[in-house]
Image (cartoon, rainbow over all chains, first blue to last red; front, side, top):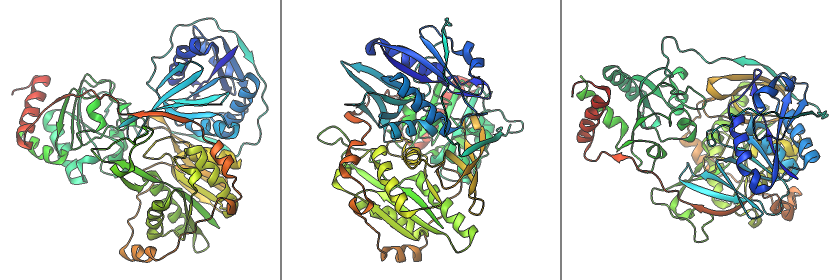
Amino acid sequence: MSAVLVIAEHRGGVVRPVTREIVAAALAVREGLGARVEVAIIGARPDVLVPALSLEGVDELLLVPAPIEEFQPECYAAIGAALIAARRPRLVLIPHSVDGISYAPAIGATGSHGYASDVFALRCDGEDLVATRSAYREKVRVELDFPGRETVVLTVRPGSFPPASRPGGVPATTLEVPVGPMNSEHRGYIEPDAGGDVDVGAAEFLLAVGRGIGDRATAEEAAMLAGRMGATLACSRPVVDAGWLPKSRQIGQSGRTATNCRLYLALGISGAVQHLAGMKHVETIIAVNRDPDAAIFGVARVGVVADAAELVAELRALFP
Amino acid sequence: MRILVCVKQVLNLDDEFELRADGLDVDRDYCDRDLNEWDDYALEEALRIRERGGGDIEVVAATVGAEDATAELRKCLAKGADRGVRVWDERLQDCDGMMIAHVLAALVRREQPALVLTGVQGADHGQAQTGVALAALLAWPRAAVVRALEFSADAGEALVRRELEGGLEECVRIRCPAVLTIQVGINTPRYASLRGITQAAGRSVDTPALAELAIDGAAIAAARAARVRRMYVPPRPRPRMIEGRAGEQAAALAALIRDIRGGPR
């Protein structure tokens, strides 16, 4: 019987939530593929993570002890390739996360497997596996298939599948896989700056500015406007990269999640998928952008096609 | 010592873009072309390593692309790259990241750089695969999503910080030669000077044929990792739009916000 192989992601001894999402993706296509679902856990103590990944529907946990403290890309690539050789899975699912994209392409390239990244939908069409992803800043979608490939490796976009959550008894098998030389070494983590008294994750009302705000001076005006509106100022990544606002204000994949937010006013934010990951769940999103096709309008309840800087100036007059 | 920077010309869609007649990609007539933003940061990082390291470092910008991609190499030269190399062949038409990685691997074998830098991903397809695939084909060390980099040629290693989720960063020590994929925000890319642009316009770009790089064209075609079945424009849910001039839009927005927040209108 063919298999769908999921490679679990964990950090600091904790399974990352995206792992349960890709388990759900595997469970969703197993029937179409006629495949069992195997979840590999790679690390110094894979057995410790067994309870967290004993999920209903999973057929087998593959425990692969590895001489690494934390994620190491050559180690994951070597073990992934060895598991494919041993188990011949039809499909390998890896999170499209920072660690996932650090080794998944290596497995695809050296094994000459079918490969696609940042996939958010998956189906079977007869014998073919069809993966859907976006391109050109989310403006189009692309359907891909993988003719002639015995194994297809996909990285799956976080947030695309509701996580598998029902516990189940899953047998575990320990596999010894030799790992070649490793040429990079984990030297510790740097925790994010707490941001002093600002906690954008806790705020109910966020006024968030993006690159479309134009310059530092307008970002400062937006900060003043936020204060007068009773909003907490937040931003998207380019604003931090430009040095207009500190990292602690950033919403998105590499920043904070707007966990408590109920009203999100996005000014000049185009809506890159990394930003949406931190805020698209918010109940009321109001988006202001000059581009009528900006992706942010796809998640907004109310939209305004306008120059963000101009609108900040107009709004300041209305919130004296 | 040499640093190879792999760059890509990416397409930005116009507001009124159209798909190609075969429905497999966008029509290039409806696109602007630009240097991939992530690669611009990778180039800047290479230039800074050269400037910090003194004279003996050469920065080479390389791309896999048709004739019009020369424009992006000229931008790199104008900013200070020492040389530009462009590889193209008709069999690379509509190539994916895996095919590009195979070509770049052959180029790396010829150029023998001490370090390869490229962007985390392309702004067009966002596959985030070429750099790591390249490292794997070379069996070189690799680190992805690098947002701080200290390269020591003497020690033959680099200390990097990788940007992880949620603002966390990971410190990694990595042996070189290595392939590092560079995240935006690692630096502030410079603008080309007028003098640089003028000088770059007159410089030649090396365009080796596949055979000169000992690349088997058929093998490259076989490296394609996926086939595009179709491309389509997804139905986009539209929010309620506030129309009017800026002043009217702002007034409606202010009323709406006060409504939601329960303040005075």
